[in-house]
Image (cartoon, rainbow, N blue to C red; front, side, top):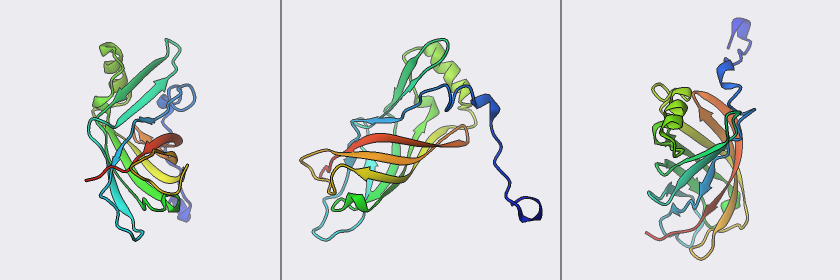
Length: 173
């Protein structure tokens, strides 16, 4: 709260404006995201899911006046919670990617990107799920469920709303 109980607005990082979200198309795509889940019991209950190391990828595409580029990282951590028998009831969680793990295939650009993202002080990019829509109501081991994930992306300490698509499939122990 600010003076006399009024709310103060968070500071706007003007140096980030030309890069995000206005002039950069930044889409977090969880390509091939496979979430590990303990085999569910017959009764509906919420379960904890985690990204599968080596099979979960976070990718981005950026548009810049000096040239468009893509990057990715397979160093993905996080936790998600949902009821696999009724995924439409709600899906919560957080996804984290170390800034230092983002790669574009160009060492110079990677170095510049880490400097721009202030990797020394803001070591993680974090996505917090605020809601979701699912293509099917249940997650099974036989088919992918397409998810529209709605939440907030935090980069360099600045949080912005972001919607992206993901796939989930039930994987046994």
